[in-house]
Length: 380
Ligand SMILES: *Cc1c(COP(=O)(O)O)cnc(C)c1O
Image (cartoon, rainbow, N blue to C red; front, side, top):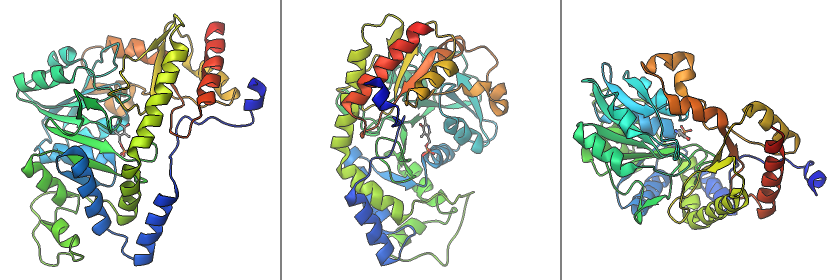
């Protein structure tokens, strides 16, 4: 059985697109209006219904984080608390504003921000905390909000992994200060590339709408009427961060299929949980897939000596794996983001491994992945 698999690579992740998405893109191409117009307006409308709060679409999730921070007046001289164990996009979004990212430790079980550690790093310059919803789980999000409130901090959630996740039956994005999502090719839904900011703060919404279009005031309103602004004012630094109609057309169709895509993800994650439950060295994330829509399936392998050797063995068996994420404070550009050690992050990361997860994965694929994984772990 195992040998039969090696002719086919089991991918770590992949986009899941159908005829509806193709047709929608063709419709945009036929109409010949590729920029930001009615499809983006439609996608924002549908997302706003989904969340029950307004959504503003951007060119990617990193841009969403960047503009959300800028809209909170965060910039040079300010500090933003963020877990080191995140995609470098979180850090780049902070440094793009001129603010300093302050690397924090994570909770060893959930791999989300340890707010007690974050609280110990608060200074008079601290303005915001960026909570990262690792794998789709939100950790102690109530504790994070309580800590932010105690210290007068804004909360910008990097919810790139958590599209569709609920907390006490309420969707991430439907409550709290500001939530940012990514629709890149492999996220829970995609628009090719893309992202959005969700909040009910009117001032933040208007600033993000303007700054995504080079700061041209009220240009969004004109574009949704099929026009653009010729006489305008610009009052702050803006960026070329809007979403195109091509992207939005894909996103609209993906959102319609979201329940099916989500169901497949949670089914596969539960299946992995079951298959790996009995191995004493494998630690699974403590996620309830009734509430969490998993973006990735990451495990910790206690006593793992070489992540790269294990990953190479898996690859030889036709299985792509990943490591989410190399800590940011290990990177040259961000090595000054921590004055004190991050013991949990430093200890946990070398033992992390991410297994394939996407809606196109078959049940038998998870069986094969776990069979090989457990075989190779026992060799190490
Ligand atoms: C995907 C992702 C982002 C950024 O999204 P892009 O759309 O790729 O810019 C930010 N943070 C995390 C944790 C992500 O996984």
